[in-house]
Image 1: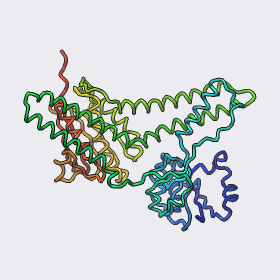
Image 2: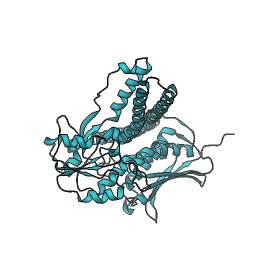
Image 3: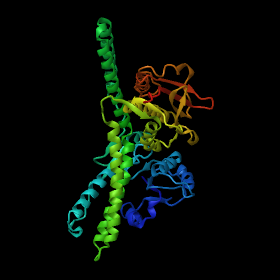
Image 4: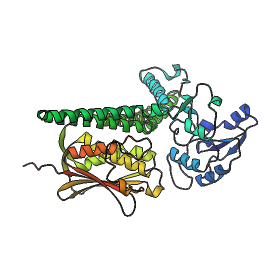
Length: 450
C-alpha cells in the first residue's frame, strides 16, 4: 500500500485522532496521505471514484452529508462504497458485512463489558485513582471474506491472529441441515398419513400431533429469523453500551478532580441508567420473541398485534434502509388466535417483503401493513413496491419447499399458510397494478361476549 485516503467526520477530533499525522509520519514516512475528512458527502463520492492504484480508504464515522441530510454511519459508508474504486478499511465491527474489507476493529460488546466492570468497582467504593488504566482486549483484526475476494487480497498477507468472517461454506455444510429437516419433515408426514389411513380412531390424536409439529416448525422458523437479525440486534445494543462507556469515562475524569461535582455525577449516572434500560428493553424484546410457549388461543386486538411486529422489525428494516409503515383501522378489530403464531405469520410476510425491496431504488424500499374490516372478516394486508410475483408462480408460493431464493428453505410462506388456516382464516397474494405485491390475510372475528 502506497497511499491512504481519510474519509469521515471524526478525523478533526483532537481527542481521538489528533495525532494521526505524526503517527503516520513516524511509522510510514513514505506513505502518501489524501485527506478527504470533513468534506461533504457529494464531493467525497466524486473523489473516491478515481483514487490512485495502491491506495486504500480509511474511514471514521459519518453522520451527515454536510448539506443537511443525516445518516446512520453504516448508511453513509455504503454511499461512499457505491463510488469507491479502492478497498475500504473500517474501524468497528458494527460496519463489517456491508461494505468494508475489515481492519483492526473495535468490539463494542467487549468495551461495554469493561466499562461496566469499571463502573461497578467505582460504585462499590473503590477509588478511581487506585484503578490502573485498562488496556483491554477490545480491538481485533477482523475481515470480510467476500471483500477480500472482491479486491483480490491474499489471506496470507493478513495480520497474525486475524478472523475472517462470511466465508462461503461448502455445499454440504450449507445444505446439510436443510436436507435433514426436509427428510425429517417428509418422514413425519409419511408416518402421519400411514397412521391416519390405518387407524381412523386415532384421527383426533393425529390432529393434535400435527398441530404440535406446526408449533415446533414455527418456533424453528422464529429462531432462524432471529439468527438472520443477530447482526442488527448486536448493532442496536452497541449504541447504549458505547454511551455507557463514554459516560463512565467522563465520571471517572470528574471524580479525579480535587472537588468533584456530585450534581454532574448524578446526571451521568442517570444517563447510564437510561442507556442500561434501553439495552435491557432490547434484550427483553428478543427473549419474548424467542420464547417457546404452549399454544394458547385468546382474544387479541389486531391493530396492536400488527404494530408489535412492525416495531420489532424496525431495526432490521433500518439496516436495509427500508421504510416500514402501518395503516391501522380506526376501530378495534378483535380476533381469537395464538399470539405467537399469528405474529410469526405476519413477521414472515414482512421479512419476505423486506428482502423483495432491499436492492431497489430508495423510493421503492417501502412496506405498508394495513388492518381493516371486510365482509365481517378481520383483514391484514402487507404491501411492498417490489417487482411483484410471476403470474405462473402466484399460486405455488405457499407450497412447502417452494422458493425463489438461492438459499431459501421454502417453508416460511408454507408455515404462514398453515398457521392462518389453522385459525380458520385464509391467505392469498396478488400483484398491484402500480407495481409490487400484496399479501392478504382474512381471519374470523372474535365472538362477541354477552
